[in-house]
Image: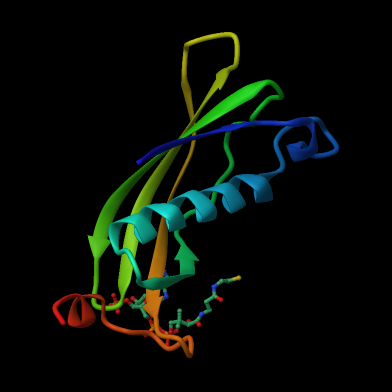
Length: 122
Ligand SMILES: CC(C)(COP(=O)(O)OP(=O)(O)OC[C@H]1O[C@@H](n2cnc3c(N)ncnc32)[C@H](O)[C@@H]1OP(=O)(O)O)[C@@H](O)C(=O)NCCC(=O)NCCS
């Protein structure tokens, strides 16, 4: 799944670059949409992200592209790999700026973990 975000002034930190927490929030939101699309009717919560290392700043006037790909399906969890690319909104050249793995766990109405395939076959 591919999704995009336009970096707005309210997304910047006090140095004028993208606030890292915004990036993580967008990844959480976009990847959650991906898992919810793949398993309609199931409830998922985020259990973890793998490596979170910011090596490249994201400048104002950037468009971010989020490339979300399923990496692993476990018993109760599903993991997606997310690559983030930036480009200036007036240019076409993309630069890879971030990557992580994000894992969701299927839960029932009480928030308890639940196997993914068990109910899928009912
Ligand atoms: C999600 C939750 C129900 C899982 O219950 P749990 O008893 O902690 O679950 P487990 O430790 O047995 O792990 C469940 C699955 O998650 C995986 N997992 C656990 N921690 C993980 C991590 N840090 N990274 C990746 N996967 C992880 C396990 O490998 C397991 O996968 P599998 O069943 O596919 O083999 C529970 O941890 C929870 O409610 N967390 C809060 C969720 C939340 O509020 N998220 C928003 C945060 S603001």
